[in-house]
Image (tube, rainbow, N blue to C red; front, side, top):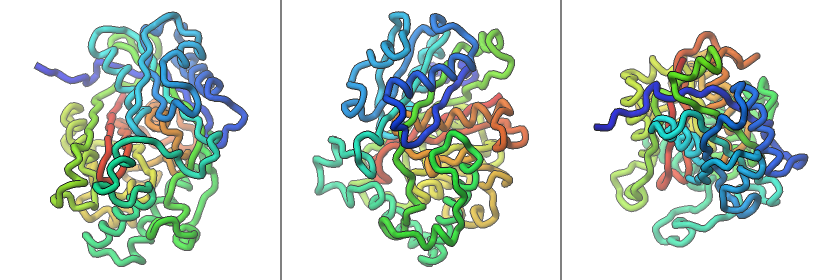
Length: 397
């Protein structure tokens, strides 16, 4: 009978590059930068790593499709390396591979590393890629990321009787909060506070989403070293333990059937339910201390608060207005600035989220440090509201 992974695996080291327009570094430079910090943080020798999972979403524009890129860049000692990709949840997929490799009993110590080098492509947004969405135009609506999430926003406004002005103001508060947090983070791409008024009055990208409702495009890498939980304190006194790691992938029904209301992300809700069950969490609103979620757009963060049961359906505006998700609120979200301030180098984002949870639980988040958090959650989403994959990971002391 399946028994899950709760408290079988610990994170003993993490590293994260500065995110941004990293024209100063090539793909291998970013890989090495994240790994060097991670290895030093774990306090182990490289030869202790028995297997690795390597996440990159768009390999053809930077590193090629195989696993040799990681082995060569890090001079790893002829160990198994698996390259993984799962849309924007690629970083979380690399972590999932490493965690399950240890939890299965196959390995004692594993590495997860995610990287993406996007700025060199010259695209203002993410480069075009093949796949179902681009080959099935009759079954896909408005096939741009801002367009798809803008439709979610207008549906949410309609579903819960928000006026356009109230809806825009709600979203502006989401982005303003993240920029305030990101201004304190030396590894973030964008480090300026932005007022609600500036966000509301910014140029529109796809109504109601304006310039500051959309995350940017960045380069970056992040890494984690995990081990058996019973070994963790041999390496450090403050390891972070994995409580659950759940992934939910769309079946396609959201695109094709009318029972999906368009105002939420169904796999997000289901991944959360599965993660809470495995972690033994009964009341996520009260038991989850903090979270990093996939705020590719401000509306994504807002609906995710409801999908993860931090807010009741249709009530997230009340929590946003009350400051619940601010750094000094009851349940801080995007303490590091989120995708809104880091941008979204696809292969790295999921691990970057975990980096913040790891540092917060250890009390090492510097000016961003929260008061004694107990449980952290990461939510990493790939795809569109109607076709996506969502990974939720819960960690604690």
